[in-house]
Image (cartoon, rainbow, N blue to C red; front, side, top):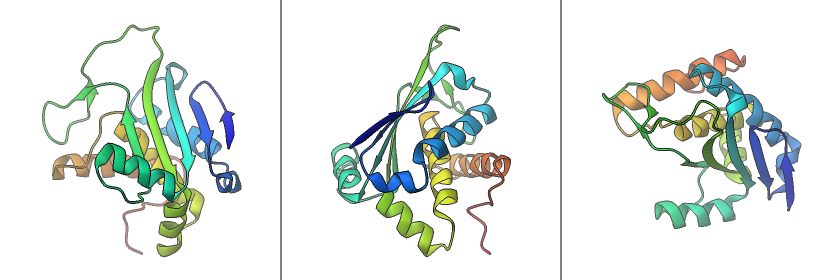
Length: 175
């Protein structure tokens, strides 16, 4: 088990050494900064905890927290409560926090095994797929979801915008 703290933004615990192949912490830093910039949050005031794990670990977490004991690609646990007035609107914090407070946005877990399988199945570079999933996870920390069609549309459009700002292709387009 390797523990890494890359910056004030990402506090990472890398349990699976295969993540070092693509520098998960650097990808998380880039994805988080781009996501926060897109929604107008100052990354210098934010903190995210990241777990880089394997399918066994994420299946355990998925079972424990979502009652779905199977592997998945990414899980997120927001650190704040968010609200949306109308479906398809950007979430906003339910409670105001002080201007000098550090926003502990929450936790993200990501599984190497599932990410690698999905990247291979879609013929995409692993780093691009993982970056997409990290953007997706950070958006969940910020209150975005994909339960309703309007919310899913907003989340997808926001992901595509953020990934384009990073020079990455639309993951939802069919080539």
